[in-house]
Image (cartoon, rainbow, N blue to C red; front, side):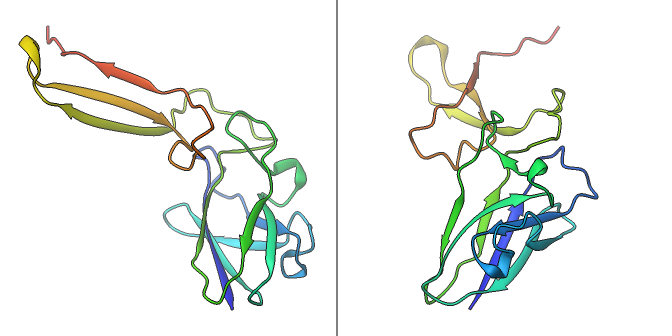
Length: 159
């Protein structure tokens, strides 16, 4: 069975960076930091696949080829190992790297999702538009993790 990976990396990842899957099974190098190299696609994602037997469990992390450039949580803390259980059929594994160790965070880059919500009319003010900025990783949250969220409301005045 082929297990496929599709990985999104932070926007500040160098364009010439190599991305690898390092993990617990020999097919990904038995925890070698440069186990399975993924190929960069035109859209900036990285992908690759490997052969595994049904019933196997793979613990893994994503790296740039070194443990000094391993994936981290958005706040820079260590990220727990990812886990993939190989069943009879395999859906592609999609993963998002929030941050790399050893790479500086670009403070001028804002990453996240802006959602625009139309709030129906109520009271004398009529309908409103609410803008909600959600940080990177919000949609993949476990429901227990807290994220900073920015809510913008009001009417713009043109001068």
